[in-house]
Length: 231
Image (tube, rainbow, N blue to C red; front, side):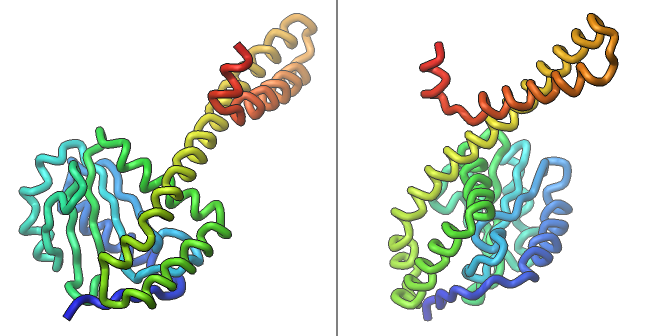
């Protein structure tokens, strides 16, 4: 019998389930592992989801991962290779009562790594979108309770649009952070010069930092099109 698709309300224990499993994964992968991330819908606070913990370890060298398949099997995982995504190692735990998915990527594969992180962070920062996505998943779970392909196909278009929005949002957040950092450095330089010229320690630094912060926020919030028009 096919595995039943169920979408449940958010469960606080999902976070602790991730942390517990991440420790076991880190022990298996050892020094090759440089980070483990909780991704997917169970990583989004207060969002309904299939109760399956999606885990994304990032490794230095993907070619070394297959040597650990027996260790993953000892934890109850099925080793499924790339499973449709080049450059991934996919593991599933729980059989028809699925509990965990592992998606391992090499650190050089920033395309796949960043799209997963961007969607997670975007949904956590946009609860209205998270609620909209959850409603779609509940609807599809009712329409395709034993048809995983139908369920996935039903949300494919929505997910593609969501990923694009999330990546644009992530890029803007990164520009904003960089802009603020550069602006503060610029402001500190101005403040230091002000203090030197007028022998007024402190006031110049505060004045310069304020100018730098404003400059950084304005510059960081501009997209590439906006900046190109300024040239």
